[in-house]
Image 1 (cartoon, rainbow, N blue to C red):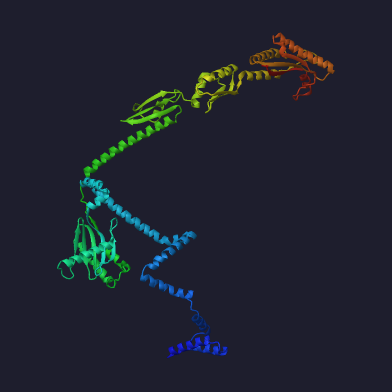
Image 2 (cartoon, rainbow, N blue to C red):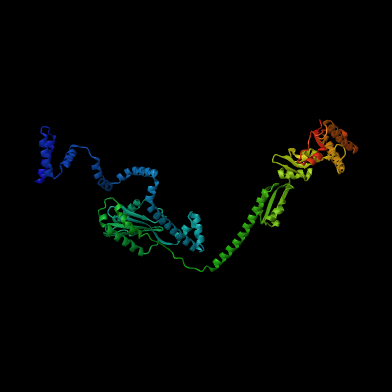
Length: 595
């Protein structure tokens, strides 16, 4: 009665809201009455009216129903998941581009254990295969198995595992008995499989054919099928059956394992099997029972006494090791010798080979290059095992060209020769004029020389000329006050002066230089200028007369009187300065003769 009244009131309320003829006071009273009858606040009731008027679906309503709708649709079929794949992939891509650390932190707890489990499984399988291979690698059957591996293209380890296999359950099928559809399928690793649904259909067809073709009791079925090395064992239950694909000769104990598995599956999943309509996701729980059926058993290797075999193997291994050591050592030495030869200037290796413990090498060698036998000793090779044939040739490398230049030109110890990569021979240092002239003529006969540069070599005679010039200009003869007489001890300087001037003039004449020696007379500032000029000239003439008497060419000598116009430059006392002003000094001029 209350529900009917509520509906009537709601209907009346709606009609009252749609009517424009009633006044606002009546509407307010009706609104209050409706809120009291429906136990709803007036504001909430107003919102309810607005929702009844609006026929469009609100986002909030969709949000409230969306989770339940997704669950119902997922149970119906897989279309929703297929549609959402592209959207989820794009969302993940955007997330990674924005901040890849979020996805990395999310997957971190999963990736570590999964990686460790995969590595552990792979190592376990590898160790098992390795153990089997090592145990049978020295057995008589191993030679036959190696031939089989070459013939079939399989690895030796795989052949060993197959030939030492007692039995292996390679595949397990859980098949719905009534429809013949595949509920679950497990396979051993490294086993090539066909379409499991097709295999399940085949087994069901075989069972149906036998039941239709032969008189069998109700409930009986095919228990075993054999195809070469493969055997199929079938264990039935009330609503499903297990079929195991087995390689080898399985024991009867395996049937008990299959029976226990089908029993546990019926015990825990009987309702799902009975209500089976084509959805196999619910049978994921059967995997733990089916995995117990994937059994592998190999022959236990009989322990044999391989003492002599191992002793022989050890002796051979030691002999091979020693032989390998010496062979590798000799090979290293040989390669080191070749590297040294190739790095030496003036040696070119054309061919090298080894044969019956001997080393043969041919090439060309400059006579100035290092002796190859010295390099053999450095590498500790046995010289008797190295047979070399070297043909002579002239290397144009700078160091050999420099050696040939020195042998031909014989430079003095004060000069050095060097050849650059362009074949330019440069002479530096000091040498006699005669040697320089001879070098300018002979360098053309040196192979590899393209040019001779002597701008950096100085003639020794020029150096000596400068030395004598300096010695002459340093000579000073002092005179008494107001006379042309020497002060005591000055006369002894004259012979050495004459010798220096004579040698200087000889060198200058040899070099083709024009020289002139000025004999300059000086006085102090005592007396008149005219008298001092005459006195200084007389003092210079006296020295000139002496040099003429020593058979020195007077054309290269000139006497000049300068009075006291050129004072003595050194800092001395006034008394000493007066004495030193009364002197004769020398000035030497050297010029080239005109061509």
